[in-house]
Image 1 (tube, one colour):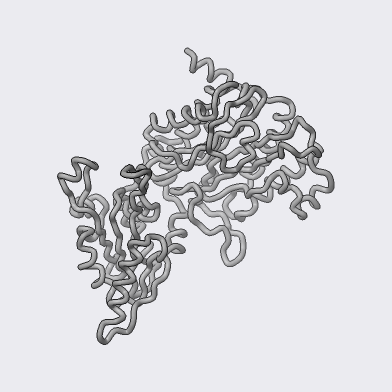
Image 2 (tube, rainbow, N blue to C red):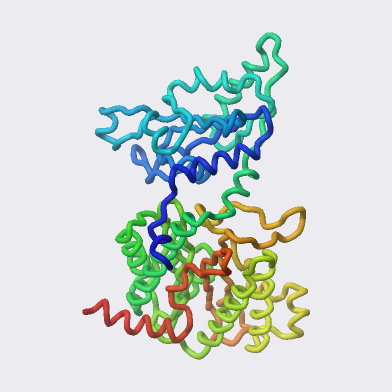
Length: 449
């Protein structure tokens, strides 16, 4: 990966271009309102680390709570107005610096900015006379009440033609965010590089007798040490039967010799995320049954990645993974019958019950439609998706040979479609049987030096 991608950042010009593109999609005579996220209480008077709303961050780059973006289409490139907290030396002494309206305009290329305390004085006037308001009613309860109050006053004013229509902005923003710029791909590449390094460290750390949370600690160490202080989602470290739980994240069991461990983890880097899953033996060497099942999942993943091509449809990679897994399960005697019949009847879903992937970007399950007008979406340059097939063998199913019971295996990579082809952003995380065993064996040597 070239160094310019790894050092990528989103410029104020790119933020401005995003806002302009969005306003070009809005109806004449309309206005759009996008809110920041709020601070979330953790317990009593402490709060979770603040994480900005992805839509708001995408359009502004502004990373503070208590802020509102107002987009007014028309007149050249349209107006972009920000309401945010004022600078306050006393409060900043306790909670850290605030950018303030004036510096926000300069840093992010906005038309103007105002104190959030002036919202009641300014926003009603901007709403008056509009035919349509783009605002996600129901997402932010405190803001819903204010907007409804503003609109009611407008509709009850003498000579009013009624309140403007209120519609959601989701569709327009989903379409914009689905296609990543080169700078966005650079940030996602950096997130994937950090996450892949974390998986390598976890493999090197892994051994029987450790607890799942100790592998989680190895992952988090690498994330934070590289400047990625937040995970993209709750980290999953599921050993033995815990790997059969899709969203297992208690991570508190002791890992046993002879078991597999499934590690699903990725970091968030400057607002963009990675999502990588690897499964490997706790003792560093696959048993015969583990290897046989693992090789099926790996073959399914490679077949699915081969179908991630510009011009193919969203469902093509999933179809490829199903075909390989169904055939592999028949070959191992875990399913009986004609492969095509097993696929058409859905019998394979007893062992592979989820789809092969999802969009990836600022959110781990990123925005974007998978179907357009009822048909699977065609893949295009700029899209980024995960590819993650899996096989899960129930622990108590006596119809299955004992050597296979209780195994959960999943392999996931982050795949970007570009004008030049396909790039696996997470390729640095070992995934062949030989590479995993080598990384676990030699990685341990490095950690003990």
